[in-house]
Image 1 (cartoon, helix red, strand yellow):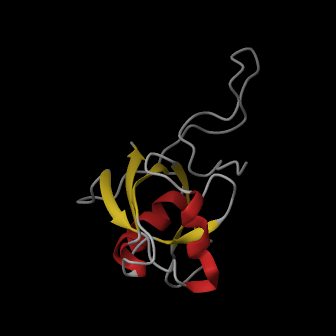
Image 2: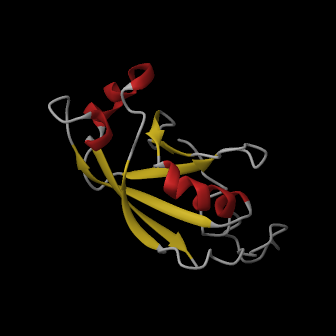
Length: 133
């Protein structure tokens, strides 16, 4: 199972008797941006990624992984819990969400609607994103 440390809002060390060396610092959330939103996943039609939709159901948890901070146009990539890449969030969202996640922000995602090939690729997966403030 993919361990999503960057985006997991919970502390990694759950034993209260062992001090954690990880900071619980959260960067300021970007002004004017919604902490909870719905988005479609783009790029599903490439590299045979759409085959992973067959095993995905509404309600499944997904992982959001930002590009490294040195990218000119950073993306936020969407992965299944087993690590399979599904695609990325729209550029308009990734532009503000990727830097925030890279700085230590946390977000979770859940599949809301999953469609097959009868639907255009950019509408096959709708997810709900919740940012940890």
